[in-house]
Amino acid sequence: MSNSHPAAHHLLGIALMSVAMLTVPGVDGFAKALSADHSPLFVSWARYAVATVVVLPLAGLSHGGRAMFPTQRRLAHLVRTLLLVCSMTLYFFAIARIPLATAMAAFLVGPIIAVAVAVIWLGEELTRRKAISLTLGFAGALIIARPGGGFDPGVLLALAAGFCYGFYLVATRIAAFTASPLQTLAFQSLVGALIMTPQAVATWSWPVVGEFWMFAGLGAISLFSHGLSIAAFRHAGATTLAPLVYLELVSSASIGYFVFAEVPDLPTLAGAACIVLAGLILVKRTERKVAAAVADRRAG
Image (cartoon, rainbow, N blue to C red):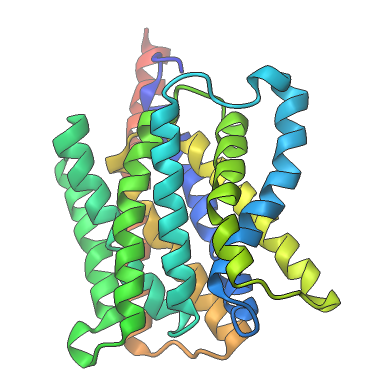
């Protein structure tokens, strides 16, 4: 990655992460629909199995058979894959019980964990604007979750999923520069499928013909969104990108409303507004840095 214009790289990272976070809830929508007739463990395995079938040939053609997987820091890649498998499986169990927007609100404890770990472990700077953005996003999640309004075990599952996801974000940052996004996707898809195979066999249920396109969608959207997020971490740090995970709530609430007739109430809309504002603070800050860098270059 070039260091000539770091602000421009940060903006690209923010853009990639934003698109990834707005599209990945499509996986949740398919998973919620499929969980009505299939175990979340089987659905989780199917997501990885479909992704493996798609990405392995692409990785082989792009890097060759011997280099289709990461060759450095394989332990870091294994850890991030394990964290992602745990996070996704717990979340699939959560959305089988509670509305998508509620599950996502609880899940969004993840960026808080990611920022804390990145600051303590990776030594990344926690600027005032990042802190404000993170606080706004978390406040929006709390407004939607309304922890004092009653507790559902599904919320606990979503919180556990978010905790795992926070560590996954940091692990992705560590592993991002050791392999291409395609190599990383090939590794996580194959290893994830292997890890989930025993659980899938134990909870096996045959899909009907009309469900095959949803299972295909699980893998395709997941590959697309995770590929973008991996690429994003090659351009920006965890403390910059973690707050953008809050954009998932906007997309999740929309899917819940249009697909599952889960009508967002006023607190949900207010919380979503806080989350969007949190993301805009980051983007606006980076746009100013890019403009300043371009102006300095022209002046020179």
